[in-house]
Image 1 (tube, rainbow, N blue to C red):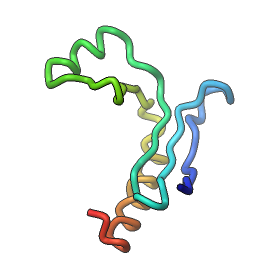
Image 2 (image 1 turned 90 degrees about the horizontal axis):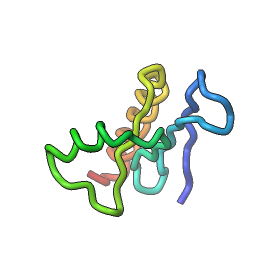
Image 3 (image 1 turned 45 degrees about the horizontal axis):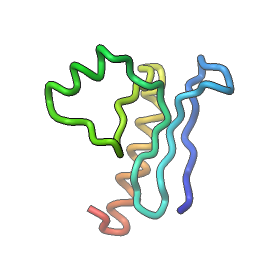
Image 4 (image 1 turned 60 degrees about the vertical axis):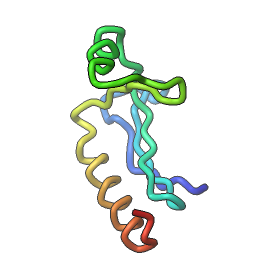
Length: 84
């Protein structure tokens, strides 16, 4: 697995940064974010379960430019390798 880094939250300190990568092998987005609070998780549960292998995270809106770039790169990689 090789991760292509797209950026960290510009307003967070170095130890607590939401971040975005793309897995160059699978074209998956890999995101690091803040753990959701109980109220957010409870609202998400209205739409379905959250398995133990998944997590609800928050990514700040100010990271949209990095996420957009990561999504574009993931889409290109998926199209090039027919991962869809």
